[in-house]
Length: 115
Image (cartoon, rainbow, N blue to C red; front, side, top):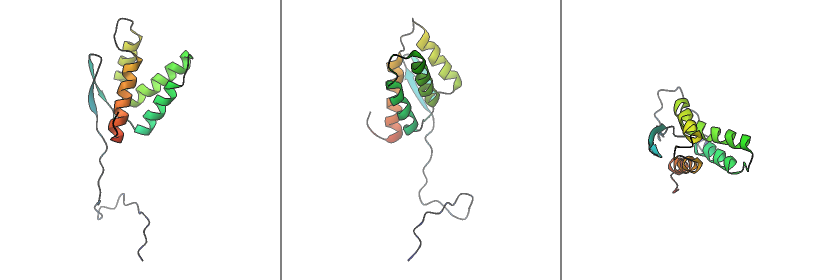
C-alpha cells in the first residue's frame, strides 16, 4: 500500500502541483467617503483581533492597542495612520463601528462565509 503521508515539494521543479491555491490580493474598499487599498488579512488573526477589541471594556489604553492591532492587519502603514487620524478627527464621520464593519466584511470574504 502506498505511503499516504503528505510530502512537501517546495524547491522540486519536476513536480507540478495538483491543486494550486493563490494568495488573495489587495482589495479597494470605500470607508466613509474615502477609498483605501486593503490587505487580504488572515481571517483567523483578524477575527481574534476583533474579538479582543470587543472585550476591552472602558480601558482606553486597551482600546487604542486593540484598534491599532485591527488596523495593522488591514492597512499598510500610511493608510493605517490616515484612518487613525480620521478616527481622532471630531469633524470626520468615520467611527469605530465602520472599521469593525470593514473587518467583519474582510473576514467573511477571506473565509467565503456570509457576513
